Length: 175
Image (cartoon, rainbow, N blue to C red; front, side):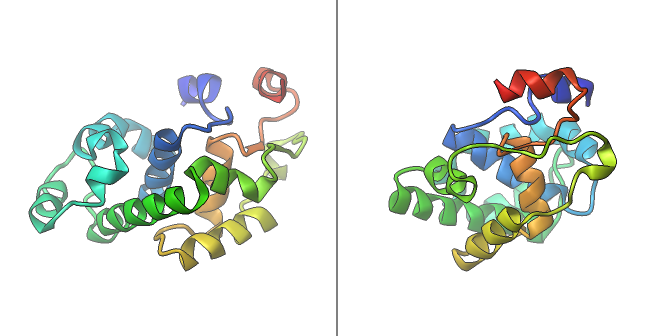
């Protein structure tokens, strides 16, 4: 978790494949700890074709059965089906908006929100932006994208800077 915090969490991401990876992993995390997902991240990359949305969108029932038999990932049929549905919706957004990055960053007007957090207790679970994102993603056919999952996604990909102001990463990311 320290490695993830110190080098990845909260850093603004604009690469579509990386954004898609975080979207799938955040959905897989629902009801579980982020540590569990980080421990399985490499397995996810392997079995989900390095988060290639075009490949995932074409997964058939045979591939789904192989995924559900793989102990390296969360073997939940709804979460696996969500990854496939999300790949299809992701590709549609890319076509419509030019990139998923253009679309997703529009929820924060293209710039990270700085909450100027002083203590962990101040970190919200949702925001008006995550609620709007959730509504729009659901309307577009995405799954496992409730407001709390969307907020965690926003934190992970740097759409919000929720590092505490006293944390060394706060100023690094702010720059």
